[in-house]
Structures are given as C-alpha cells and as structure tokens.
Image 1: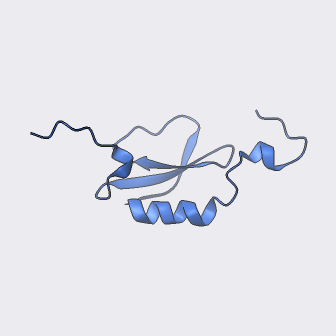
Image 2: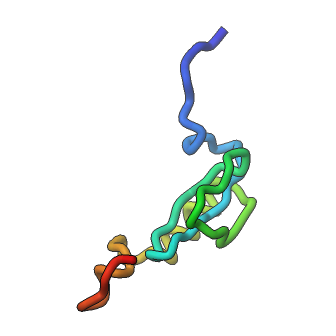
Length: 75
C-alpha cells in the first residue's frame, strides 16, 4: 500500500479548470475540488498540460490588476 500523499495539482492524468479572480490572477484547479468563492472558470475541464499552456499564454504580468495601474485601490 502506498501511503505517500500526492499533490492533486501535480497529477498529469487528472482534469483541471483554469480559474481567474477579480485581480486577473489565474489558478490551475482540479475538477474534483469545489471552486473557491471569488473565482470564475475560464476554460476546462481539460488536461493539466492544456490548462498550464493557457495560463502561460494569458497570464503575462503576475502582479494583481490593482498594482498594474497607478492610483488603483484594491477592493
């Protein structure tokens, strides 16, 4: 019996969503997990590789949206 815990975000055989929050930050999210409040689905379900490729293509600036614009206040 394998008692080692695996990180579900590292499972290449699982299906995932790409989520985005109001600060335009992206997250890889396993389909079995409840979607957290404040996040919306962008794509999926799809493979881990496809979701990561989407994030790498679209999330160019890692800063929260409020830090990308001068004089912006974080809600």
